Amino acid sequence: MSVIQNYLPNEIEKRSFEIIGEELSGRGIVLPKEREAVIKRVIHASADFDYVDTLTFSENAVETAIRLLKNGADIVTDTNMAYAGINKNTLTKLGGEIHCYMADEDIIQKSGEEGLTRAYLSMRKASAIKKDVIFVIGNAPTALISLYDMLKAGEYVPAFVIGVPVGFVNVEASKELIIDNCPEYIVNRGRKGGSNIAAAVCNALLYSATDRTL
Image (cartoon, rainbow, N blue to C red):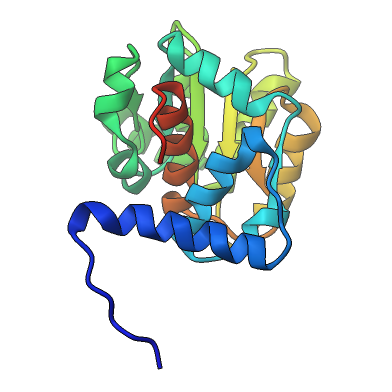
């Protein structure tokens, strides 16, 4: 039986990361230094060590994402849950803004008229932002498909994609489209993911960009 241990509120996160480090060491896993913060924060958000094997990074993903954030890149999400989970104070300090267009009236109307998902159309709306954008996708594979379609048509190249939608329909295929075609990304292969995972990846990058240790 597990024993309840008492920690002050500000100690809980620190102890959680210590436990994650201990379990990784116990499994003989040494994470690549540049990816360690991202992978550990995703494990922290999910208690799922499978992400060690399934999180997939473009060659210079973390370095690129941190540079974009330090240069004031905006963030676009596909859910209000991810929007709520991302540390907006840290993003604002870096000069960026966060957007979620899913509930916008124009997106809702176009979705009904054109038979396309709001996520698909939201990505097209986001492509009009006149600065670099980091796309943080935790729910809708059609958001990833939209980014791929614009990329394939030569209409738009996303600066960075965090692609971790969860589910069963088109989830795995949409992630592979990003891995195979997008220049800069962090994607979780397979069915797992979610808005909490998307926010965790994003926050790990934000904290790294501002030299926060956890």
